[in-house]
Image 1 (cartoon, rainbow, N blue to C red):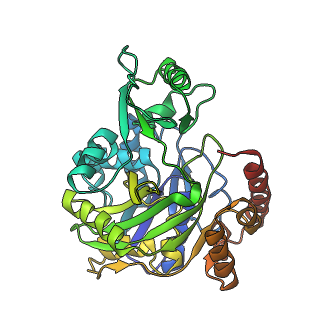
Image 2 (cartoon, helix red, strand yellow):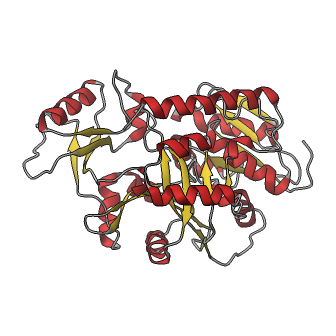
Image 3 (cartoon, rainbow, N blue to C red):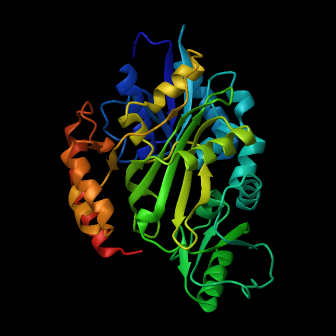
Length: 406
């Protein structure tokens, strides 16, 4: 497809995050990106704003990933067009970083180094770094599944949360009753969960963590962009309104409201600057009312699936990448301070399943002021069948929240 722009976005993934990035490019430049995926997913399938979706079942296999991407670069290379590569999930971003040297011969992209990625993604290292830089984290224990030693819980308070330190490895070892995060109330339940995970073949560390009380609205989100020179250009802060309540998707936010907390925003910014971070980063935090502190759980080394609120507020995520990687423009830092309600669930779900009255009041106000949006219903995406599918999905969301309380 011919456009006047000197670049073509190649987005790796076909999920909601891939769709949000695709519409960011479409909104800013009228460009229809190329998507590369392992399989069709409903968010991007039938979309009229993607040029082509290329499928390859071996995309997620480390030994094939780079070759597939080099093949795509050869296919879409054109005079005067730079190929801009964007990953949309943890595995694809990890594979881009691990193959950065060979991929840079064909693409431009902005991600941290492999060494920094490993420091940030191994939770024991990450929490150590947080401690060094004055960032609070929940009380956390680690258990190595490759050992046959029982877990010592003598100084632990229940309930606790159990989750894998290596999410990619965990998703490769499927088992019945597998949950993204387990919440357990007793030593017996903890022992059973650990045994189940070990029996699946998972051999990495487990994170066993103090459960911070509070509903979804105690969860917080921050998106930061640091350009290729390591200069921070964008910092946001948002309160989660709802997250997915099904066991396999817990932790995926379905609605949030932008907030402003300069002190916390700068704390996260300075942490990333101190470790030499570049690219998009997405922090997950929870407010602990017991000691009145925000505790950081993790940082994703990419934009999150709910980060689209950044684009909706006029700070287009695609523009940050393009201005940095294509036009080499320096931008002043923005601490986002505007009201917006981001949601991928219908208003009836927000009305019925958000218990926090202060947040409920804000939801009503933002809807009334038309300061809200759902990226899945992007106006310029005109495919009728996709729209019908999405309406059906909205109805299904109501049932999901009614039947699943986490």
